[in-house]
Amino acid sequence: MRIATWNVNSVNARLPLLLRWLEEERPDVACLQELKCVDEKFPREPVEALGYNVLVHGQKSYNGVAILSKHPLEEARRGLPGGGDADTHSRYLEAIVEAPTPVRVASIYLPNGNPIGTEKFDYKLSWMARLHAHATDLLQLEEATVLAGDFNVIPTPLDCDKPASWKDDALYQPQSRAAHRALTNLGYTDAHLAVGAEPHAYTFWDYFRSSFERDHGIRIDHALLSPQAADRLEGSEVQREPRGWEKPSDHTPLMVTLAG
Image (cartoon, rainbow, N blue to C red; front, side, top):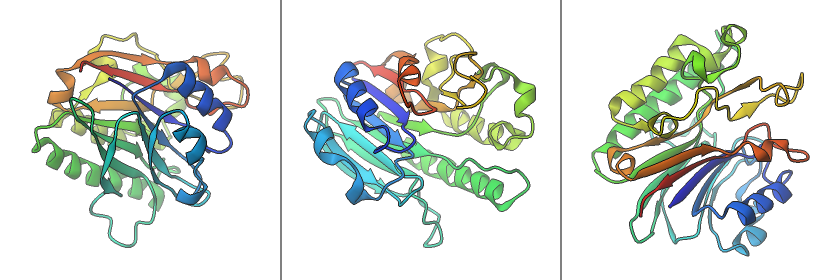
């Protein structure tokens, strides 16, 4: 089973790229982030025409996550627990992929948190604390679970081209990195690291200063696997090509392969 995550940076603006990628790569499951549209505006018909079932948790102009699957989908959770009515951001969607060997999959768009020293950074850390609590509960199910998405965290110096240039950014703050590390300390496996991938395998390059051409990138899109999913891990690949297509997202897909 091939499970991908991709921050598309506006699904309607990138629709030709998304359809091309789906046709070429044929992932079994695709977790999308930063849709920037409400549910009704998601381009459901062309995606379904390629054989995908679709779940969407959208938001006008901002955020938004989706899960596409070649297998039937059962929605498990829309929104991260613990936020109350005050948290209106569409950043978390969880479903059971009803494949011959089922997998629980979450599409995650974690808050950016910039600038530091503001309520935006506080919101990022509180959101990560809520994710930690929910991820703890998911482990108790003892299921194959994949938490995939744009985590907006650079875990280590090896995950960015120039660490010094990120020292004042919310993505690289010690608190952000510690909160991310706490997830793996629970027992989740970073698929990229587990397969012995080379360092500096970036998933995001800024649009400015020829960042992609100069490979001045960062690794912020991750797939974290429960022990049951990690036991099935066969591969993890950053697919750089879509970042070089015309009018691309500033992110590129990450593809994880599980046995079964």
